[in-house]
Image (cartoon, rainbow, N blue to C red):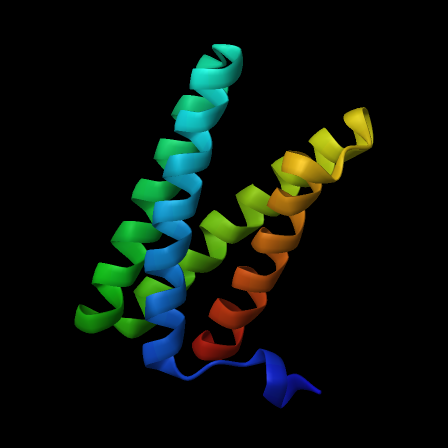
Amino acid sequence: FFSIIVLTMASTENLNIGMAVLSSLGGCMGYAKKGSVPSLVGGVGLGAAYGVSAWLCDENPSAGYTVGLAASVVMAIVGAMRYKKSKKVMPAGMLLIMGLFAGVCNLFNIV
């Protein structure tokens, strides 16, 4: 089962790049649709963290995957809190699912 989830190091680096783009776009969409400054700051902030993670994966893989794991934990916690409050799959549940998936992928590359 875990062999399906665990990605190779290069794939996890690409996953972190994708997470950087998706979280930044999500924050911008939250701001554009609802005028939510916290969504903008959170999305762009997590996007920057995932971007740094992807960059560090080339220089210092352990540090890169640790930063990716930290960003994923933050995303999952925020998603869980929002889902508990709103019970909406979009965007709260999606934040939770994406954070958990990226966190597992980064975690298995650390150990």
